Amino acid sequence: MNNKDNRSDAHTGLWFTRGILGIGLANLFSDWGHEAATSLLPALLALVGAPAIALGVIEGVADGLSSFLKLAGGYIADRPTWRKPVAAGGYIVVGLTTFAYSLAQRWPFILLLRAAGWAGRGAKSPSRDALLADAAPRSQLGRAFGFERAMDTVGAVAGPLTALLLVSLANVRTALAWTIVPGVLASICFLWLVPSGKSATTHQPFGFLHSLRQLPGSFRRFLVGVFAHGIGDFAPTLLILRAGQILTPQYGAAHASALAVALYTLHNIVFAVISYPAGALADRVGKRGLLAVGYMVATVMCLGFIFAPATLVWLAILFALAGIHTGIQQGLEKSLAAELLASEIRGTGFGVLATVNGIGDFASSIIVGALWTTVAPAAGFLYGAIFSLAGTTLIYFWR
Image (cartoon, rainbow, N blue to C red; front, side, top):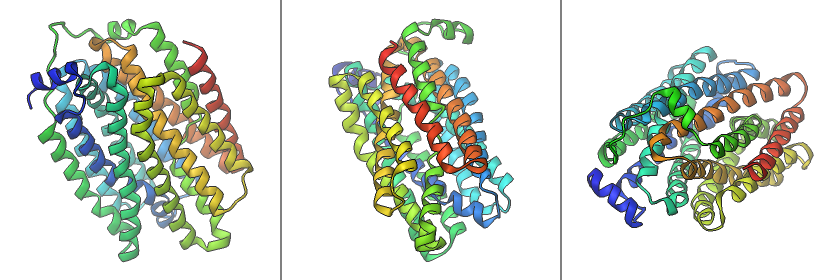
């Protein structure tokens, strides 16, 4: 399918194009490897003797670096011929750095690898999202982004399950080395199936500052709500760590670690199941209200980690709530942004959105990790609940 065919499908209502399939498969395989490594990251850090705060630092620094590259990536994405090369390069970098975890002997090296991998993800995200938005009709953007998130999360489900299997058969480092396989498959699918980006208009790309000035007021207000939520939306690896801590007295360290990974797998299953229906429902009832519901679910989940009984059943419920939140939030933020942005500045807009989320993730992971270490885990979850509630209020009422 050529680019003209892809644009024609977008305008005639055929949202499921070859490009959307290619992006979906690339995300499936990329997240398969990435999430396998993510689920094993706490175990790898324990293996190299890293302190508890190292996880918050690693996730925070990686998110922060990624956020700046997402902004640059958004500017690049407004140059359609650069979209496919930049996105493909991002998939390749993620695959290689994830594999390299298997070679790490000290946690600062893990930090460097995580930062490099997330830099690759950051650079590719706006280009990938712009290609996806151009491939679907405006009335079905929720479905397109919901499908992309669902495929991404199928890989995120397969990743921890594969990690559990490989760790039981071999060890943590062998499981991490295996991630090169889905990393290569992701790059192949993207390069083979996704058309090269070509502009459907004759406009000359705006300069960076001019593009920022062109972002509409409604989009700027939307970003305030996204940031308020994001500054409390910490990395899910901290949920894995907390589950392991809660379960260790009853099950022992090794069994508790395996159960924590299984709970994270449940989180990703729920994420995968909810993503497409949430996008399709949002196309019918409105994206903003449903996004506010997703933010509120995060508030309830954080409070649950403070007040719910410390049992496996309650942990499963809380991880499921986290999956519902993520399934709603990730697809709807992007599809709502696509509605608010003109096509000429959509790449910049996606880059700014990703940067706002990245800065929020950077702050939240480090702050929650610090509160966790210096005060108590409950302090970190209370912080997350407060800002998720603030985001809920802003995203719904300030338009």
